[in-house]
Length: 214
Image (cartoon, rainbow, N blue to C red):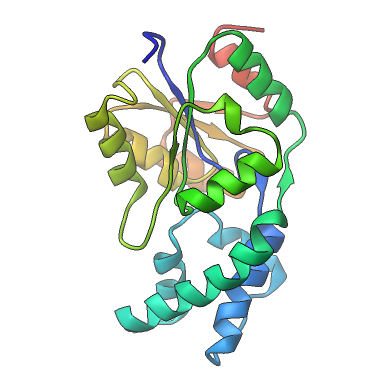
């Protein structure tokens, strides 16, 4: 691994906007089992947390077994078409290219399952920029993913987690990492302020300044 600190990116809401695919796939699962769908205007709040937490918040008292069913039904649609209903944020590809050209090591840590994350990165031609892709699953917290990366030596304590939700910032703090909150994603400024990141960025271009390149 390079001696330079790794910049670890979240995926949903940080590199791309997955609102359409996630919203439609959540409702595919909810409606299949007779639950109320999520209105389009409310989808944003469900982008970032693990799927099991999303369904638990939507259906009070839901059983663990039913959560597994809901997640499976969600992934049924997401694997077929949902992953491709993504839109990359303007300036992201250029920022990643510049970071890579400056030999800044990059990684990805997402609550999304790793194979889905890989497919999205390939879709946008971004996969080669990342040294690793850490994906989540039911019962795995983002903080646990970062802890595993530290144990494996894929990242060090000087690494920085970059994301759009408080879950990203808090996971970094739990593992003693630096954190950067992006303001173009799905986390509100109030939510991110409450998580107290080390820095905020308002545009992808500002990521270059964080890495001491322009």
